[in-house]
Length: 173
Image (cartoon, rainbow, N blue to C red):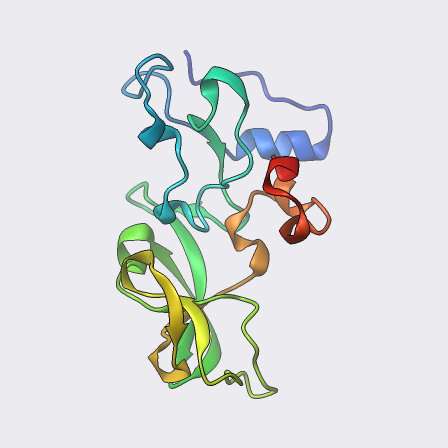
């Protein structure tokens, strides 16, 4: 079938990457010729679920992607990503997996937000994604979840790129 391939076993990284690859092509999916820019583009619901960097060049760009490092599928087949629960401005050790639909209802802080030794936010305002994925500054008591890791949004292979956050976007690709 179009969705079945021999596994790439050149090295452990290529094997893991091959196992975590997802495709919008094949039976019941899209065709390269009919897929427009809106399908191939990065969407805010991909955060923590689909890597924005790792996709092939050429006609398959944006149609074949990789799962992000911590992404998983739930029992209904939806992609989920983990978040740490925040209660009254204090980050807890409780991890909850949220789908893109659920995530849109919460205010979620970035993993690199400043915390004290009691896991409380130290800044008066914290950069976070609000309802519907809009980024902004929020008071710590308004935050409900926090990313588990700064590498949460990229794939296993992209997470291995040293100083990725300081690279030019085109170099990372």
